[in-house]
Length: 333
Ligand SMILES: NC(=O)c1ccc[n+]([C@@H]2O[C@H](COP(=O)([O-])OP(=O)(O)OC[C@H]3O[C@@H](n4cnc5c(N)ncnc54)[C@H](OP(=O)(O)O)[C@@H]3O)[C@@H](O)[C@H]2O)c1
Image (cartoon, rainbow, N blue to C red):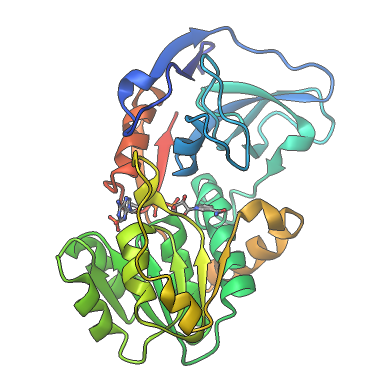
C-alpha cells in the first residue's frame, strides 16, 4: 500500500466549460485520525454533474469549493486506521472524502457497506446517491401508475437508467432520451425500456411524438434546455415533471430561454424540483428497495471507469460533455 497521499485541488473557477487548468494535483502528507475519526484509503471516487456547480461561486443549495481546497466528492474505500469504536481496520465504507487517495473523516460521517452483497462501486451508483435520487424522484414526485407513459432524459446514465427500470417495474411505458444510437440500443435492449429517442439525430420532436403516442404523463428531467422544452409540448393533462437536473445548462454562459411554459398552465402540469438530500432520513428505504430489485435481476447498471486520481479532471470533463456511458467513476487503486 502506498504511504503517500495525493490530492486534486480546485485551482481556478471555470468560465463556461471546465478545463484541466481548473485543477491542481499535489502530493500531500498522510493525515492521522484524532479521537472519533477514521483514516480511509479511497478505492473509488464518484464523479457527478453537481461538481460543476461546486466549482462555481454562484448561489446554490450548498457552499462552493474554495480555491486551493480538495475537490468534493463521495468515495468508497477501506478503513486503514480507526479511533472510532464503530469502525475497524479493513471495514469497507462510503465516505465524503473528495478527490484524494487517503482522507480522515468523523466516524459519524461514514456509512458501512456490504461488499458481499454488491461491489463497492455500486454504492456510488445504482445503490448510492444516483439510485436513491431515482427512487425518491420517481416514487414521491412522479407517482407512477400502471399504463402511464414516462420519459426520462440522460436515460443511459446513472440516474436515468435507474428511473426507467423502476418505471418499468411500476408498469409504465418507458421512453428514454439519450445521445447516440449505441446508448439508445443499450437502453432498449439491455435495460428493457419500450423505446429510446436519440436527441442527437436532429428529429427530437417528431421522434418523441412517435414514441409517445398517448402523450407523456411523467417527465423525469435530467437535462433541461431544448430537451425539456420538447417534452413539455407533448405532456398530458395533470402530468408531472420531476426537475432533477439541468445538465445542458451547467456550462452555459446564458441560461436557456424556455418557449413551452404555456403547456404547464394549459395542462395543469405539476412541475417540482428535487434535491436528494431532502430524503436523507429515508435513504435506507431506497437502498433496501434498490437492493431487492438488483438481487432479483430487475435492475442493471453500467459503469464508465477512468483509471487513477490524476485522470479525475479528464473524467469530469468527459461526463459534462456526455462522453460517459453509465455511472462515471475513478478507480483509485
Ligand atoms: N437533484 C438531485 O438531487 C440530483 C442527484 C443526482 C443527479 N442529479 C442530476 O441528474 C442528472 C444526471 O446525473 P447523472 O449523475 O446520472 O449523470 P449521467 O446521466 O450518468 O451523465 C450525464 C449525461 O447527461 C447527458 N448530457 C450531458 N450534456 C448534455 C446536453 N447538453 N444535452 C443533453 N444531454 C446531455 C449525457 O447523456 P447523453 O449522451 O445520453 O445525452 C451524459 O452522459 C444531472 O443533471 C445531475 O445534475 C440531480
